[in-house]
Structures are given as structure tokens and as C-alpha cells.
Length: 544
Image (cartoon, rainbow, N blue to C red; front, side):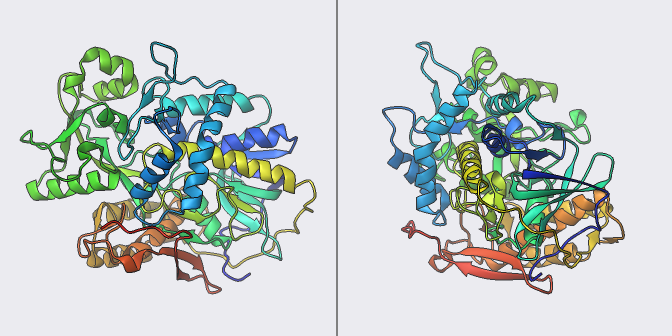
């Protein structure tokens, strides 16, 4: 079938369901809750344990207009400014209008958000926001509370296929998604036939060595969707969080998770300093340390390059012990366990891969160009994030998308016939497991916060030359998918000859009006990537 590929041979086991949901973060589980309520047979697949998701690690919070001192237009404007001209204003307004109800539904399911002394929701400020509209849980355990609530809501209602990886989205003779092929926890290939497929596979942060993402975030969903014929949009826009803990050498442990120092810490008054104690963001942006993440990360990278250092510091010593213990207990515990006491010393930090603003081109209900395939959450590119995500919009987007995609599917599947049988597609070459280290090195060196033409050419050359493999296993699947997604990122980054949002070029330092375009990529009938350029759906006035 034109523009599609597969990785594996036929399966050793099969099952059937109404909807196959891949991923168990906020987007996937919120969809599962609604699908189960509608009485549908749902197969849920997750690569690790059910809680191995970026959602469970999220510290910052969930953005929604909650206070009478705030309004939807302000939230929309903040999102558009952060998105640097590539947001779809209709999608942004859709999210902003529906975010409060999504959080109220979560509260009805049992979520508990922090309150002030009077019992009202305690609202916080984060970078890029001009109003307090961030809801937190447990200080810095917001994502964990979302995950706990949703896991509790599906517990006992179905069996989740844990330790099971997406290999391919299957399609029938008409190009309609008709199920998924997976690699289970016994290294057996299985096939799950479905009337609809819903991907909620999260981000791609594990393509870089420094990241806030869990080990499962290697781009499985994007790669599988691409091979099924989906369009990948704006892959170059990878957001690097400004403040990832740099663990002192004596406390480093192989495989240790990246520790994110939440945006909320800066929202409450912490600030970046260099080795000499000078403020890094002074004079860089009107919001100083609360500037959008792309601005802060770029300023950090420039400062480190100018001074020859590999990290800076986040100074929150003014908080005192009680404030740290009350507002940011998890961050405090993780820092102390790694040899840093934020109460008494500045925290060593540098930028790290955090959130992918690009993804599979999709509507706010997850609809893609592949019939029967919906993609939601971070794996989707809806136009909400644009060229740079506004802090704390992503969890609310995941909840809104998951609920809506499931509601629409529940209606559609009442009358939609089951798709045809899966058809064979051309096979794609596999990449050896030992190639992943070289991939991560070249992504860190040339496809990170700052990029240029020569570095991107070198990155693409390295990605092309990764060693081949002759059979599929877990490590081979990781490298194969990561290489395919890394090629998407580097190709779009090389094509976009400007600096916009979280895509920064040292050889093209200015934003260019001619590049107020989406870069779309798909496979042609020979398996090669082809590019197309599309205007954002809504006009946006470029900043002067």
C-alpha cells in the first residue's frame, strides 16, 4: 500500500477488541475510562508498568482558567505567544474553554488538588503565564495524582497488557487501521484486531542522553504511525526544559532518571545564576526567569558556551526549609538523594529534552489522515503547542483529547462495520540495538538546543549509517524506531532555516515570516520521506 511499511512477520498469537489503546498516561487512560463507561471492549497496551509514563513524573501542574481574576482570552493569548506563530488558534481556544471541565471531571473521579487556607484551589504561576492558573497536587506531585486517579478508575475493569510494545499499526486493503502488532513481555509477536486504534504513546525524549522522559519515550507511536501512512508535523520542535538537575559525579548512577526542577520553582521566585552568581536572565526577556522555556534554554546554552561550563545554577535558597518541604517535597527529596540540598545551596542545572511539540498531525479529538487511527496527547500535533509549548498546557490537553476521542469513538462504533483483514505492506529495515548510543550522542551534539546546517548534515549521515539487524527484539525495536523519529526531527530542523520557538539555529538566528509554515513529513511509495509545507489554520500576527 502506498506510503506504508511494516517491521515484522506474522504473529504467534491474536485477539480481537473494539478499540486498541496504546499508552497509559493521562491521554490514554482518560480515553479508556470513557470507552469502558460506554461498554466497549478495550485492549490496553503499555510498554512498561501501567504508571511508566511522563504523566506520572510530571511536577508542574495543569493549566486552566479557574479564578475570576483570569479569563479565557488571557490564557489563549499566553499560549499563542509561546507558540510563536504556529498555533492553530481554534484548537487553542478549544483547549482553554474545555480545560476547566476536564479538571472537574478528574476531581469527580477522585483527584485531589492543593487548596489554600480557605479551602479554595491554590493557583500557581509558571513561565509564560500572565495569571495564576496552574493547579497542583501534593506540591510537586501533580502528574502522579492524575495518574493515580485514572489508574484507580480503570482498576479491576480490564486487564492491561504490561511490558508489551507497539510494533506496527495494521491496515486493511482500504488503508484503514484495523489493529496493532505488538511484542509482548515474552518476546512473542502478537496481533490485536480492532475496529479503531488509539495511540497515546507520549514523547521522544529518550532520543537525547539528558531528558526528563521515562525510558519508554523512544518514539514508538510516531514511528508506527508513520509506517501506517500518517503525516508527522513539526517534528523539529523539541522543547528542552531549562532546569534539569546536573548530578554531582560522586552521586551519579547509571540509568538514573533525569530529575526535572519544575517551572513552578521559578514561578515562586527562584532564579538562574552563573558560576559567578550573576543573574542569567536579567535583561534577556521582560519576564526574566519566567520567560517561555525556549527563551530560557537558549539563554542558558549561550551563557554556557560563552563561559565554557556545562551547567548553571538555580538559586532557591531564599525559600527556606519549610517552603521547600511543603511546596516541593519530591524535588527536595530527589535532590538530596543526589548530593544537593536546595535549602542551603543553588541547584546545578542545564537544559534537557522534555516535551515534543510536534507529532502525528491530528485534530483535538485525535483524528488523523489514516482512517480508524486516532492519536492523542504528546504523540499528536494538534496546533495547540505551536512552535513551543506553554508550561502546564500538556496535561490538560491530554485529558481533553482523551475524553473527546473516546466519546466520538463510542458514537461512531455503534454503526461502523469492522474493518477488513490486515494486509501485507513492504518491510522496513531494522537497526541494531547497539546503535542507540551513537544516535543519542549525535542528537545531543547536533540536534539539541542550538543547531546549524553542518551539524544537522552530520547527524543525518550518522543516522543513515547506523548498523543493521536481521531480527526483531526489544533493543532492535528501540533503535529502529528511535532512528526513524530522529531522522524526522533532523530533516525538519535542517529544512527550517530560521529560529522559531524551541527550534534554534545558530546560523539563522532570526524568525522569518516566510517560515510561518508547518513542515509535514510522510513516506512515499518507495519508503522515502517526502516533505510538504502548510499554513497554520488561523492567521497569527508575527511579533515585531
